[in-house]
Image (tube, rainbow, N blue to C red; front, top):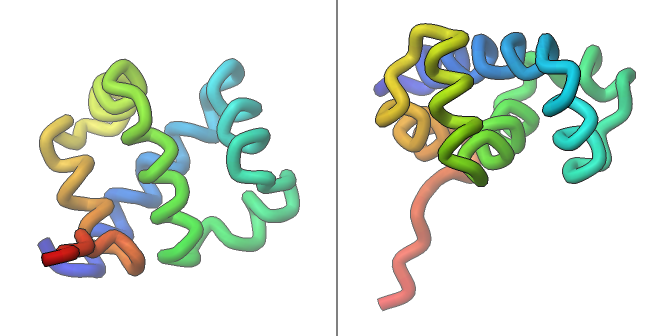
Length: 92
């Protein structure tokens, strides 16, 4: 997956998250993001990475986000891995 495609998909997940009345405040509390941050950083790949990190914390959120965006659930981790900071660390 190219970085441009990953950013586009992550932006779709972010747009879905903004529409979730119960989940959005949890994201804001966990990330420390304010409403201004949501507006200001919505196109920032690092911020979108934090959105993907958050969604990937719970399988139910992944499934719900996938259903709401048309993105396959199994692609959510691939999207995160393609965005800045999503590389897997190999300690050996």
